[in-house]
Image (cartoon, rainbow, N blue to C red; front, top):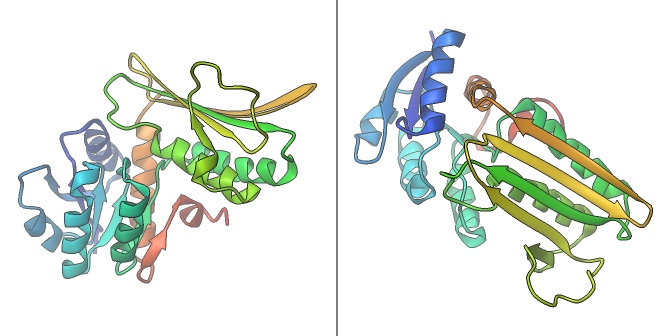
Length: 243
């Protein structure tokens, strides 16, 4: 039986990209809904929902998915830390892939960032720079947020180490700081650079996206994978076998 996919956030850039890419991949879309549409009815017809809507709609989506026993691929970003903890408890009740970025290349960047963070000590200053189009609503991006989480995990730091830009007389940079800078402009699909700078050398890991189709293909790959999994929260590292 063909996989039945529902798109939530169908009018957005990513929702439209998923619809086009699904057609190219020969996958069946049984519904495309947006704010104000019949989400519950759409979920009742679907095996899996691919969501690129709004962070404000995530709780409703997950509650309905749990009721309908529908698998979820969640690409929406912008949730606060406390809110995300509560949402993760909901998401764990169904098979769910939750990722800030579905690109294969970006997920390799995650793996390389973890390795570099483990190898390079505190004398290598870590900074993350991201740039997106002028229409993006949240900052930093979900991808940048995940890169920062990886660095903090490997360096055993918490979120108080983050420095979101710098202004004024800030004093010398502390070794425990992790800088994050969000640039916005034009039609940039998504650029991310992780920099480790020491005295005498600098390592930069960079991924640049030029076509949203890479994210759509990854999300649909996740949709095909997650329907065969038991309830739980997964990410693209699981989907791609990078763990």
